[in-house]
Length: 241
Ligand code: PGA
Image (cartoon, rainbow, N blue to C red):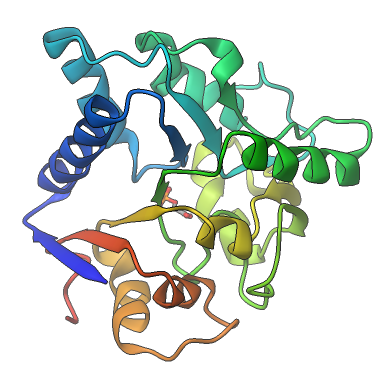
């Protein structure tokens, strides 16, 4: 595992953005694994600015997202479909058909999980997966206790995850109780992983990730089994390290 120490959120985003742009330029047909949440927003801003300034093109890039809430249609402002379109896709020249996110309103959700896993396989796997980490160590929506062997599956969101994400909703009650997420084994299949960690509220999780044991109680610890992980963290997140 490689650890890149940065001063703040802006520098973390810049470092990650440069790595992604380099990959896209050297392999314009790659499959990017993307994440939602507060953490990757700065990276997406960087990709957009670079696309405008340097004309990096995404016409042959494919993307797969980690997860989606169950029950929220794509047009719901809190869905991850909506987030990705607004925050990134609509600003790039990536084709809508090449951007993939689990469908949280599929009539058969078990079937949707199988379809998504098969889709990733058909795309040739994820070349570069961008990840955040939850305060409880979740990656994607794989909450503590998830088997490391898990594939795309339906999860019940942990109460602390719903509380953490309620900042985007009008109330905690509105936060969906379930989601579809790529599993831990699906994530570990990625050829390369970039884990971004910013802010003091993630400092304990980062410390446990770096110094703690590998355990299903702490999903991110599975990344230690992967041979190509780069962690980019800012000074506040690195408080205990
Ligand atoms: P955040 O979420 O980027 O909004 O902090 C990360 C996560 O929960 O995985």
